[in-house]
Image (cartoon, rainbow, N blue to C red; front, side, top):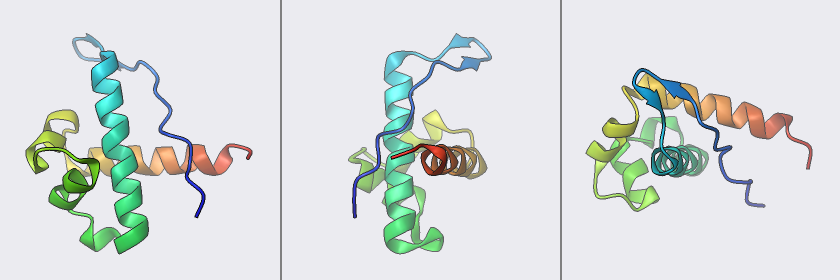
Length: 89
């Protein structure tokens, strides 16, 4: 299976300003790992712990630092998949 381009990294407004480059990169890493995990094992097995492990993070708590909830991560995953599907190859 061909590798998809990495997550689109754009600065997004947040409550206290803009996300830093590091925050954008870490969120992209987590989103990529979530997509890979869901593709390989299905949504039911894509827990924060397994996503964190796939991303090479210390633990599931790291995901909670970058995403307010599972629904927040899920929304970003869906948005990224839709961006990739719409992107010409």
